[in-house]
Image (tube, rainbow, N blue to C red; front, side, top):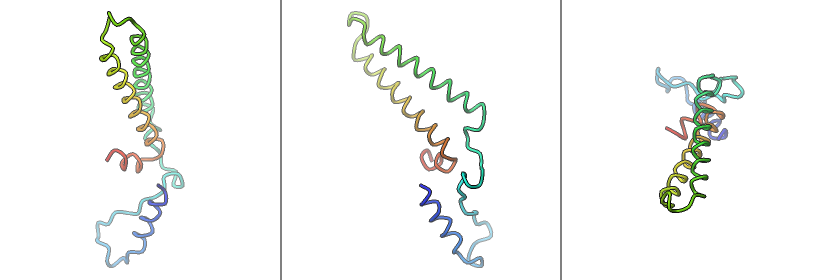
Length: 112
């Protein structure tokens, strides 16, 4: 990922100043080397992510408990579907957290 950023930075740096428009976007900087903060530096974001992971984890636990119940209580297809949706939610949350830890640029690239 950083090689693409370095390539874009090099391309922007090689454009002659007279050819660049007045509203040119500054080159993309590496957030690690510039000391920029990530979105997870905010306490509210961390709290929201933790609450989301805990709730999804609790739902996954409930789904696993329901899966072990006799078929007379709940339809097994509904429980399988529920568990798959919870796992998909956890996966999306983990990918989002990974992107937020990496940098704002990675988050924008992954989630547009």
